Image (cartoon, rainbow, N blue to C red):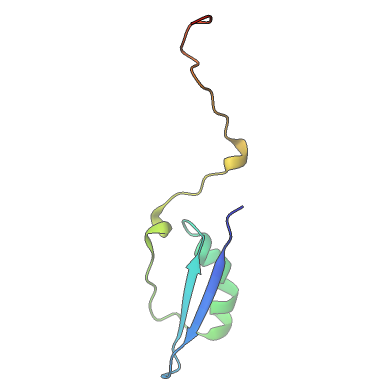
Length: 73
């Protein structure tokens, strides 16, 4: 499992910046939804490139090596 980290930065003007690491796709929004609802209104959201990547369940991946080669080669 990939480590997921949420960092908060409170600026002098009172704005809270939230940075999510280790999440792909909309997973970051799911991780932070409860805290964001308690902090107040989200005024701006900047998505990192990972947001546009799809999530892959690696536990169900099967690799087959040289499946098209004839036996005894």
